[in-house]
Image (cartoon, rainbow, N blue to C red; front, side, top):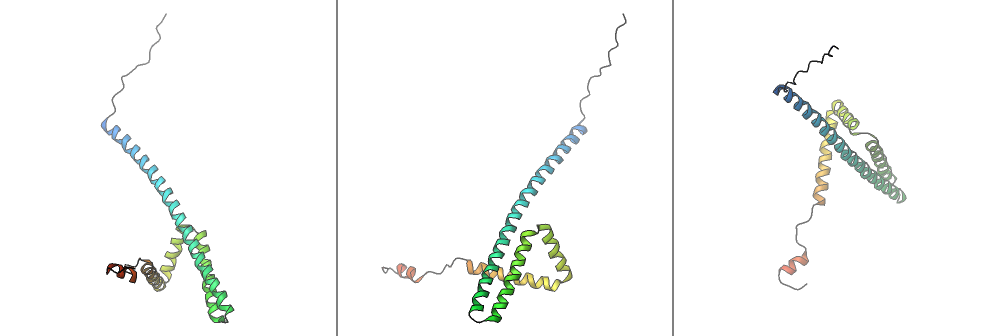
Length: 158
């Protein structure tokens, strides 16, 4: 009987530091890609919620102008009523646009308009900034004491 030759068994060589480092780098890249994808999904969800909120707010603005247009029309101010109705329609169109388009399409459209009409874009940015500043200024808490507070501070009973 002839003995069956056994396959040569070589002892495993320990992995080199270079191989270990390459493996760790690959693992780190994969984990970074997973974390980035998760962050992108979460950010997309937040942006989508904000976009829907903005569309709802613009829709409310359009509704307010529509009511104003009806009130102006009933009071005989048809010229102002037409202007308010036009603003309401444009705001409603904007609301639908913001609600139906994704962020990438909106950014692409704004960029396209800015390249074609830079003066219009800068004017709109300035007007938007002024409106935002006015809104923020009007909504900040008043720090002035009321007459009741002044009387109480002076020691008089209120």
